[in-house]
Amino acid sequence: MNGLLIVGVADGCMIPPSEPALDAKIPEDSDMKGQWGPRTQDTVDKANEQLNYFAKVLKDRGVRVDRPSPLDFSKPVSTPDWENPSSFGCMPPRDVILTVGKKMLEATMSYRCRFFEYLCYRNLMQQYFDEDPGFRHVSAPKPRMTDASYRMDYLADTIGVEKRLEWTAEKFFVTTEEEPMFDAADVLRFVIPILLQNPNVLV
Image (cartoon, rainbow, N blue to C red; front, side):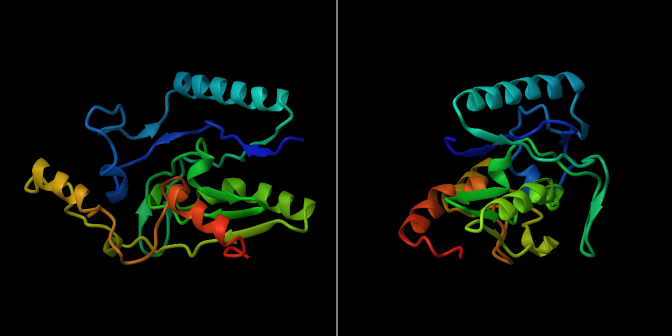
């Protein structure tokens, strides 16, 4: 066996509804702009075709491939602080799970539509725990994601493109420092060197 990879699944993927962190990351020319609802079946089928082929290539090379368990992403989600009309999907595992050796860290996420996405991987986490006594499953504190966690006027027309470019250069983004929020893919470049030097940091 040459390692293990989790490859996502496109089943039930949604174009998520408007929300603070999401809106700031959607390019002006994106097909998601101003849209919301289930991805068309042809795009889901095409994505799954590529993901399944990728999984096959890995398996043919002796890599163990596991897949997440999709939820019904079309259902509304909520906490005591907010409500969102739908979730997102489980196509990109790299955003949710940060892996270093036998340690897997669940990221907090910054989109409300992805708040419960970690549930798609909990069966796998339990399986790894049962299979390997050295496995460590760590979950970052879940943020409340109240409006205080976002600059709600970040995309206001009165701001202007030049000012927003200045903000980006200054690393002044739509999220505030109210509470820690991160996607695993966003922190990879910073966290991996730290973990390699301090392997017990997630113990």
